[in-house]
Length: 303
Image 1 (cartoon, rainbow, N blue to C red):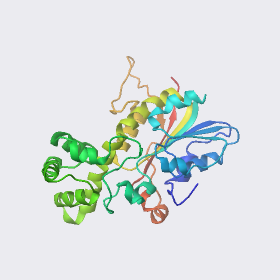
Image 2: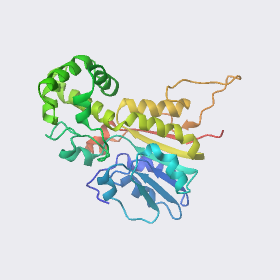
Image 3: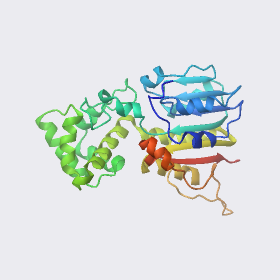
Image 4: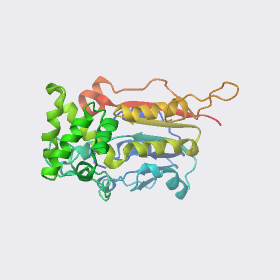
């Protein structure tokens, strides 16, 4: 396991939240550089850890441990693999959502607007859809919806219209070409990088169907967690955090409080603590990526 691959965020806080039982079964939904997995494995004696990652680079970076089962798949397949490896129910699950430092730093992967590369952004390098397809084949309505929904871009339609115009002249192939178009639409020139980040994030989420996968994962949790089992989710933008918060607080993705005929709310999880946890100033100084991290922890209820 190469620590340079990805520095785990909120490592101690997230793993300690799982209250690791030495013989328990756990899941690391986002293996990445293996930092969170290593911390979990160090506390296990007889238990097992099932880890997911769809990125071939992460799989190649695996940590050798007989208690680790690392599968090359999206975490939306959680229940199927837990059943296959006879690990149901589990004692805890950790997910460090979003993109890894390694993926950002590998310029040819096309995740960053700071380096010129092909429009790719696939977490699973074998996936058919890349950023190229999104930018060059989506209709103006669909492209604007991606920017608005996943990047929270206010001028999504004018931006999409300009991209459609530019690609009608010449196919957009690289991150540099896309950047040159996008930066002209930043509402405030001193915040151009933030705007670029939002646009690239939106395309990345669409390419990898990240929000859809997270929704599927969350819906499976009540079926796979033991009563008293723990979940720890680290998110980096409001779209992910809102889904996690809603599900923990209400048991559904919309955040709608549902009560029975007696006026009682039944929800599968209880947040503990109630508020999210953020990185310390010390961690932010050593790992700037942790600045936007939000950790939410919850315990599985009965019923």
